[in-house]
Length: 371
Ligand SMILES: Cc1ncc(COP(=O)(O)O)c(C=O)c1O
Image 1 (cartoon, rainbow, N blue to C red):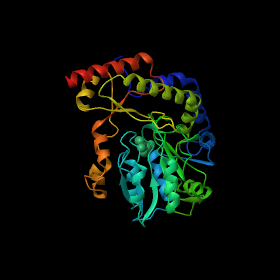
Image 2: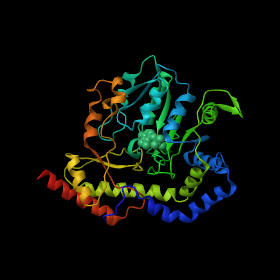
Image 3: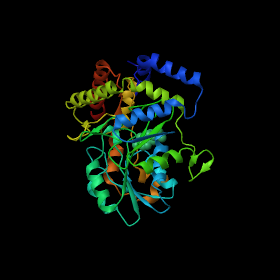
Image 4: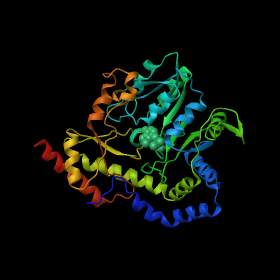
């Protein structure tokens, strides 16, 4: 058990080796490393999976968010309402384009954006709302879309952690103007490097995104707009195609393992579990709980061979790069969550014995640290 992985990519590769190796070999044989046939094949499959018209693969999840904002023509000074409790990339892309992230606090039990605070954050400069479907559970998109419609705003779902999750019978990434995901290796659907995709039903946004990812070209060496080098490699697309073969099974396993953690931890005092709303599921991009004295707990668990992680130790308005966008005492629930969240090992291949070991070690560590 001492070799327990936080995200077990080795077992996943062992299960899919024949298919992934064959797909990689095919790319090596045809040699079209940039925009080869696997790119379009993956885009078709993912668009069908999500249930939208267009999927545009890009170099990373960050690039998907950046290209989404560029496709919406975000201008310097434009504001984007987003959550304070997320990975830096969410706000980074807004600032890179000269925009202003306007941070809204979270619901304390799901860590997703608190929709009841969004409208107060909207001004005449607001262009978009960018919720994050944190930990694999979709944010309250119906309400967010309703607010956006009232104010004429676009909605970009940062679905880096929630690919495959369902919300009111529809899939994450297909719930708003644009959905963006990441294929970072540890994500629910990962490649073996960097990759990402954006999803939309809007033909103009899809066309703009396709142009932006190839330096703004609408035809070879005809640069209609300013773009960037944002393509996803053919090899990485081939790997995701291989991973898709058991993705439905993996999603089901993630839901089951998450539900089993929730059940086992119900009996562990001083662990607070994340709430999952009844109209959606959670694919547990991270399996995260709330604890006190996290640092001590992590050290005890580490000594027992159990890796943990913190997503995230500081809300963005407490990070030096983003402190200018909100006072330090803003978003108090995000501040509290950042002090308490701790993620436990999670992957589709986590077996029950390892999971029992994690839960028992956590219970013992809590007893020791609270004694
Ligand atoms: C919420 C969130 N947004 C954006 C990203 C950026 O994705 P990538 O690492 O593929 O650029 C990540 C992943 O790290 C993420 O967790």
